[in-house]
Amino acid sequence: MKRITVRVYGPLNDFVPPERRHVAWAHAFEGAASVKDVIEGLGVPHPEVDLIVVNGASVGFEHAVQDADRIAVFPRFQTLDVAAVTRVRQAPPDPIRFVLDVHLGKLARHLRLAGLDAVYRRDATDDELADIARREGRILLTRDRELLKRRIVVHGHFVRETASYRQLEEVLARFGPVALAPFSRCLRCNALLREVPKAAVAAQLGERTRLAFEQFYACSGCERVYWKGSHWTGLTRILDQAVRQAGSP
Image 1 (tube, rainbow, N blue to C red):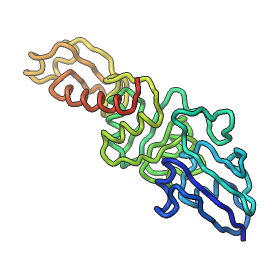
Image 2 (image 1 turned 90 degrees about the horizontal axis):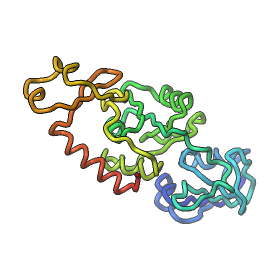
Image 3 (image 1 turned 30 degrees about the horizontal axis):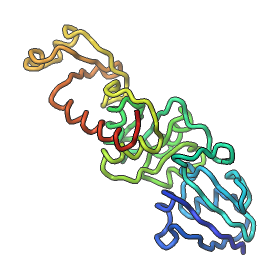
């Protein structure tokens, strides 16, 4: 039987029982195990981890845990650059793009509102989501920590908030600062919007809309038409608040 001491820091405490939060605790296990196996066995998904320190030295996920090891596990640092010492952080995707699980439809809409590339399908399986994240180099956003633990998922985040506008703030803060391009993507299908002449979309408009508005945008994917109607103010308010809270440009 191997006995080790573990402590997790910051937001990683969300994944452990209350009695283990913000303190070091003893953990016993049998057989051989990597530090990744140990950490995830305790409930912490590996994409949430930025730095692992064992007995005072940074190690990678593959490090073999030994008896009497002291393990400290850290999340992403917001103000401290640990790139020189971390062995688990991979460079974030460039550009930042997301894929979201079936529970985060409203968040997907808000991310698209901000101009961020956010893939979302209500019928997507966990296997499909993990594969999209791997194949397309996307960040997986999920409310399912077991999905986040899959080995092929490199970049991901467990969304803590439940209200969609607060989820937007959380994601922008977690992965920011990230340049935004508001109202540049279709809220329905994620494709880019393009400005179009009024005459080109007049047949799709109601009479009151044709009389009241002159500037229109069409989706390059599903061809849905957008204009600055009564909904515009509400959407702008949601985005402005999220940007202020998260500190994104």
